[in-house]
Length: 110
Image 1 (cartoon, rainbow, N blue to C red):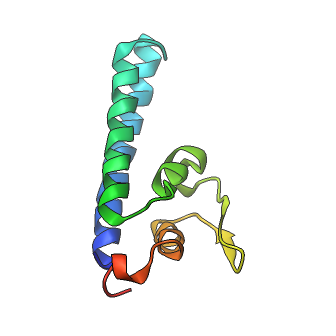
Image 2: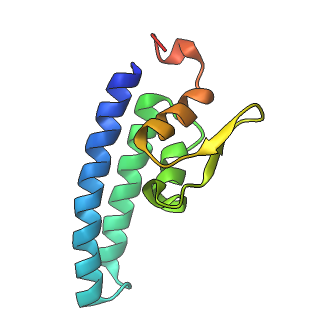
Image 3: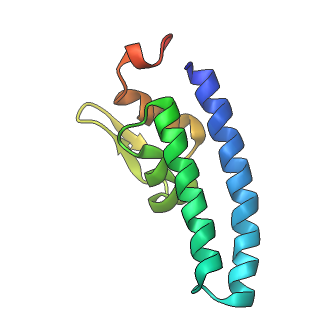
């Protein structure tokens, strides 16, 4: 999978997640945070994230971190390795971070 293909998949996922998150906030307001419905939605989102991570070879669960801990980049948390770190704010930053830990043979034309 190329970086362009990775970006296409992640862009589509985060657009849909954004819409889902807006509607989920409304649902939580109506029914509260507890309950099976809300938990099921979060489980479904987590399953999609794990599937995308497997598809693109993200063995470090970077997408999961970006989504939940870094709040889709809005927190601008630092990511990287011992040689280089940077704030991870955008999908391009996320792809950079993923590709740091994935051998080139796993992605083809890096």
